[in-house]
Image (cartoon, rainbow, N blue to C red; front, side, top):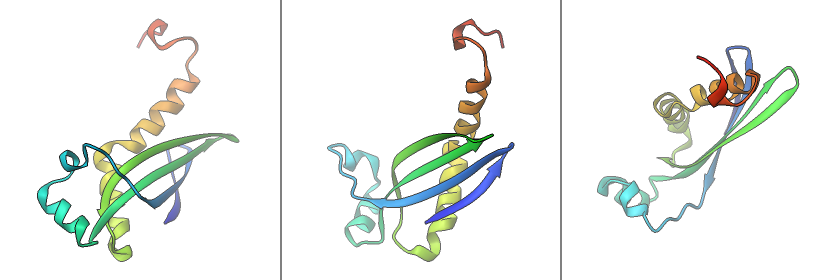
Length: 110
């Protein structure tokens, strides 16, 4: 899935790709219900890649390992929840704000 939007004059292209995610801690990452749903093929793991652009300059932001529905018709709603709950879009804006500052972060007064 791929879609575009903009936030605070930052143009975003958001890609959501199904991935084969494996981790030795996978059983800690999912509830028992989610583990059962994953085994039944109802949920799977996705990566979210956000390409942001301001005045021709681009940044790529990568967030792997999101357990979401395997049903395409419900995926957009779950992606919206992930973007809101995880603060991914806020982090993109923060990256651009840091990019505009002069000098190292510890030296700048806030």
